Length: 268
Image (tube, rainbow, N blue to C red):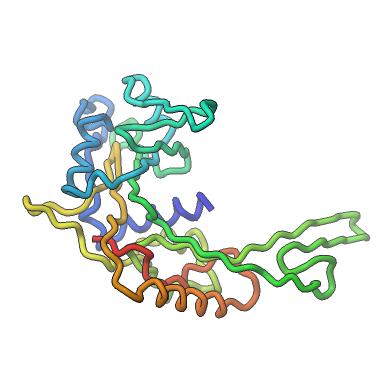
């Protein structure tokens, strides 16, 4: 699941329609680095303030382990105990920290490495799941969701688990015309041309746009919630159920169908 999210993020923020959500502070060389080209308290605020008064709605930040380590050396990572006082939850500027080395990195044009960090608002990705049939499967042992398969001649046994769900980032649509199969591959998810922004940017008094990607680096959220009109939830549930019924066989992932689902929050 995390790999799918990262694949979507790579392409979404490479799309021309999301250019206003990018804040590039990186240096292309080690010698050119300074406090203004690194992720720290000041540059993080520069990113969040691009959302104006909506910046305080950011709840999480995803970063590479090298970025997190650099912030920890600066004593900028706080550790908060969980409700049982056991596990330590990492936070940065009051936002939950998610560390993932699958986030995009690239070599600087001269030397060094450029890291990408993402900022998220609540519910940036929507997920919907549908139960699979509990009826016994034909030709196997088990059901559509969980099936046991035995190849006696090869002395191999396999336990097959299937899931059917929809995963989609709110605020953008996926252009499925270029998808060859029933569900997009990771490569198709990472194609910038397959994504288009559909919600307006957050407006600020100084004319700025949304919060961003730092090339050092933090990318902004897909937006912030606004009021839901009466009847919208019922309409979305109806469309969601209709989308799930369109599945034939079980599918690992289908973002094509999620085009029919408006986000649960309207992002502005």
